[in-house]
Length: 202
Image (cartoon, rainbow, N blue to C red):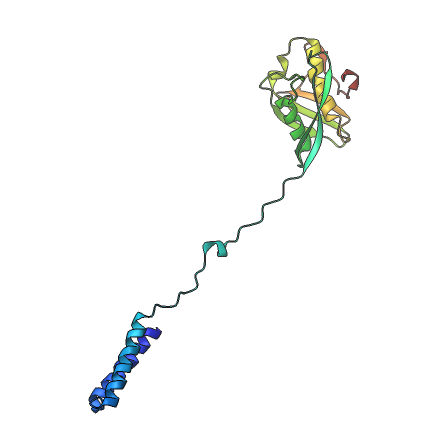
């Protein structure tokens, strides 16, 4: 914008000088030369850089979110010989459905090499509900019937009952299979709600 203004003013002065005949003497020639020099400088002068706005300035990088709070839980798996239960500590993200997350961790199996999985591969948690009176109803898939004998069924069921029993709000556990209350698994009586049995823990 400034360059255009200088060029226009220089042209006007030159025009006036020529029309008025004032450019015929030495003083006029000097003025014309000065105007020419000014015009050349204006043409050579680079425009001043305009401030630029980067996309980073419009959208500043957000501070990384703090890591999610975790809670410690206790899971019960089979011992090395699958003759008793052993406790395994684990941390999971703190959530409203902590009991559901706990059972899902139990079904994933142990992390420690000496501990053994008690729930058959493929077992899924279908639903879980904790009533105000402390009864926890757990609905699992039909895979739980694929245990070898009554001892294995006992360890499997009590790994669940003992794990949930770590929560003060859980007093008893009833097991459902595919939406139906289970009376038994391999002769293990499930007709009544079960309370934790930590005598099985080694």
